[in-house]
Image 1: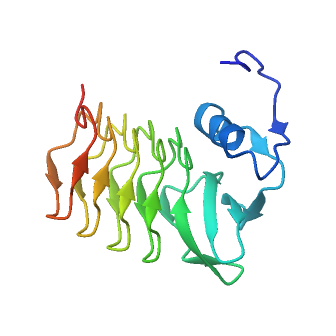
Image 2 (image 1 turned 90 degrees about the vertical axis):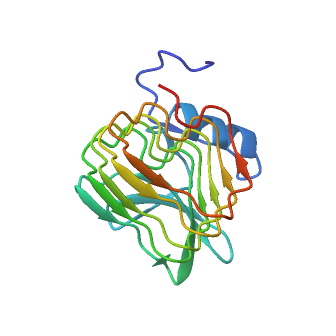
Length: 178
């Protein structure tokens, strides 16, 4: 980790065209602000394209979170890498129709996340997405999801029931690792 122990690092400037560096910082340093991102309603950092919005970090403190369906008139289509990573205030999340992807590590180690509503519009759930969500007891993956990444539900010790649709074509390695 190139920036390990850089405890004072609060922000980084990365070109929008450098997808690798942007992913790296979101994945390993989710609390570091990537310059150029915007803030919505004191709850979410986000980035926008000409036609859509990707949420990049939840910065609110609510227990029950409703992801916005749109920001600035553009649909929210992606819950990005590490968006809710280690957000231990979060107990429930409702994701609106229109979101098509839940990125890797999106809810990683949200220790108290107990309920999540995933809409039918979601097609892909990334690697390690719900890893370490120790209070999650039930999850229904909607029809239309074709891929679940590796270790998606690892260390979800309270998970009692998962409903998988017929549309699942690929499940990554160790989806239920303990």
